[in-house]
Image (cartoon, rainbow, N blue to C red; front, side, top):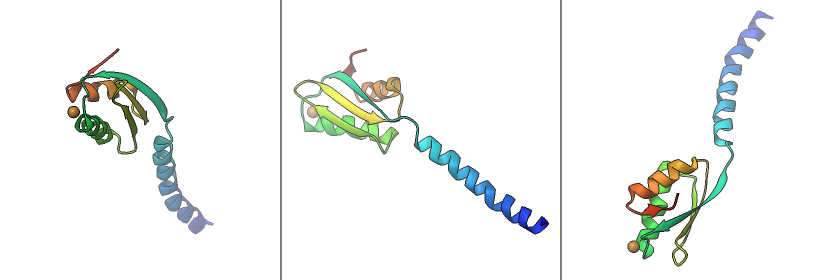
Length: 94
Ligand SMILES: [Cu+2]
């Protein structure tokens, strides 16, 4: 009985840790749109996309150059994404 308990408690902890990690990956992924000024070419598209993905490798980024619209599917909070785009040198409507 004691052995069973020990085996359970040793094996149970990693299971708990795994659950915590999975739940952080399962944070609500929201889709946010940003109006961004200053993007003119595919180089800008790549710069914005890579800057966001440097903060969240799982982020999906779509850029509509003509409309100046960036759509981001990510677990990152909106103001974090805004800050990242601004750090790249583009202006983002509030
Ligand atoms: Cu460009």
